[in-house]
Length: 484
Image (tube, rainbow, N blue to C red; front, side, top):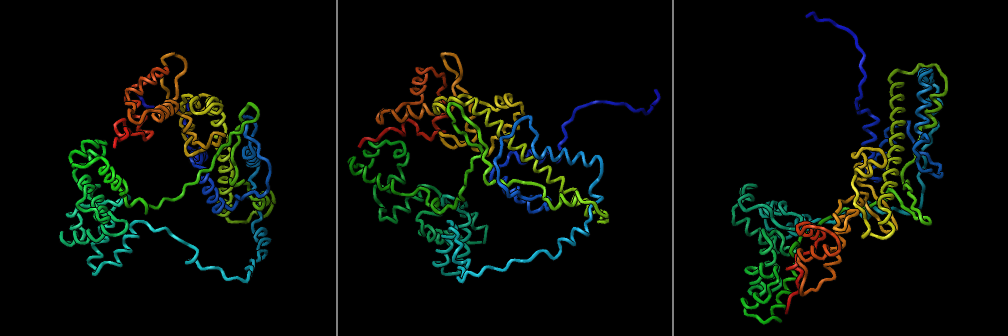
């Protein structure tokens, strides 16, 4: 069979990740604070892009009405089809007009000396810094300081040592005696009980610091922590030979100890939550309003727009023309992606309000089961798009501030038929059942299952146990009030 070459026409659909699509996906999954940082970065790098300072009412995006970016893009495309305006820009004339017009501002004299940075900037000290400061004040030799820094560098956020003595030896050729003596010194630093290997050693050192060495409290910590944790007080009193009142006093001492001494020195940065959507109730209807406060309003720089519109010799270098052309495309692409992001968030928020209307009206006990596919089918988008929208986005309602993911939960079947019940509603019901129980006779997970079954909710015991752990509710044995 002879081989031959020929031309053929074939039609097919393919998804191509264009720069516009990549940027739209990137912006869609950003939080508002991250989006503001991204826009400020673009404003810094792109001279064609600038922030519009004029204020005006912002209409909600609609499905059919073209956005300003789309209109500008169409106009740009139409102009590009007829002529290339970059070929007629008089760059030399433009830069001659600009040259010499900038006059630097003179600093304003206030007559007052500003404080130095050393007096205005402050940094909260962490656990390692706090211990190293004490080490430098207490260590007698440089070798002790070296061993101490190796120990402090292997502490976790709770203050426990996560390196063994042999591992510390390998770090610098230290002897076990040197490590143990330095370790004892650090364990006496503030906070007392750091650099311990386990909880029992941590609590024992704190008891010794309080002068309780050899006491019943130390005996409980060393040998009977299992009885204490399971509230087996009668058995504990018999083993120690103590009356219940004395046992109660010893337990109160143990309760005053800190099982995680390093936690108070943990530095946690503040995380501010800015709502992306406001839900406002007007009469009997809920209105969705996008929060665009603090979000820069972008436009193409009028200076560069005039450069394009003005005719000229067109004698600028080719690389300069290509630079302006690329920056202009980038600016239009960013504006269009931002408007598409706001439009998508608005659609998802409207769909959530429609599905969770009963929650807004009556509270969490009327929350409906909702999955991403429900909203995706409602607004005609893919589930992955909805997933990106609800990530790190927040909705402000009259019932509180919630992440958009809060409204998505699986459902629990009802024995009476009808719609399923949201798992969040079931968790709230479990919390109320536990809060109303008798402290001396707490309900087990099986008993909670029976209560929910009587209310028409069909749920397994292991599911109740899972929800109880997610609510940070102890087991029935731990919830039982002690008898003294």
